[in-house]
Image (tube, rainbow, N blue to C red; front, side, top):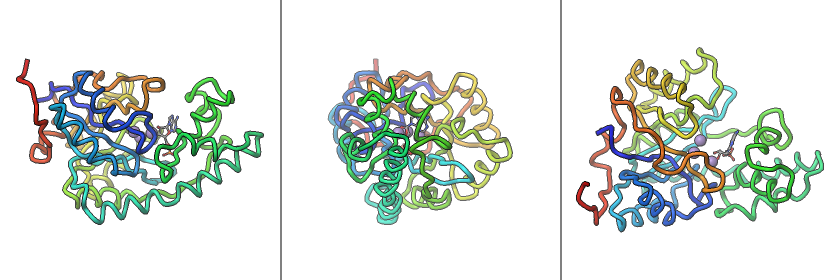
Length: 292
Ligand code: AMP
Ligand code: MN
Ligand code: MN
Ligand code: MN
């Protein structure tokens, strides 16, 4: 069961990816993915498109989302998989979470203008496939296009992150809210890319125990955001805290992403994959070819 090619974390034009849900489905299928989830930031309006494109390709599908959460001094991302996309409380919670983004984007642009980078709001908006979901990624693309930086990695090194021009504090959902929205809608909540937060051991322990206390059950072990060493560390964490393991490329764009859809190594055999508790939630691809 661990050996199947599952990619349960990626982004479309509905948030800060550059490909549509349909093009992503085709790309995932062509790359050998057999179980797929689209996990746009704070937004599930791409779910029906992703699920029907996957079905037409014979690709198994789980509903997905990546919710922005404020925890301690950091923004933590919680992935939800296998929820009912029509759940009212989940939809309302996500709508609320998206709410402050436009205002934040104006504040980010004002801060960038102070260091001589003008017109960044309008520039970022041009890249946003969904105007309700302007993200730092859209600012980064605009700043590469206008020659401020050579690539988006340089943008995030010099701008838009804590202590750098263009960074604006923002209050996202609480950990409790995000986990409750996902689980009340029948899904499983998962801590995304745990190595990315720069937490001290005591802070990480607080995240894990509070997350589990609220009903969270999973953790990403194999992700495009983890090194091989980090994947080993979080394999141990999953075992110690009895968490289900998830995996996903976090693919955003062919030009920007380091890891292609479906290109990650498989989950270690010692772990219990998150899809083992979601079999009833998997939307089976209609035209599935016989296993090779
Ligand atoms: P936002 O949700 O607007 O805060 O944007 C966060 C997004 O920026 C992430 O989901 C990534 O797609 C992108 N990103 C890329 N590199 C970084 C980085 N070093 N720090 C934070 N975000 C990054
Ligand atoms: Mn992103
Ligand atoms: Mn993330
Ligand atoms: Mn992501």
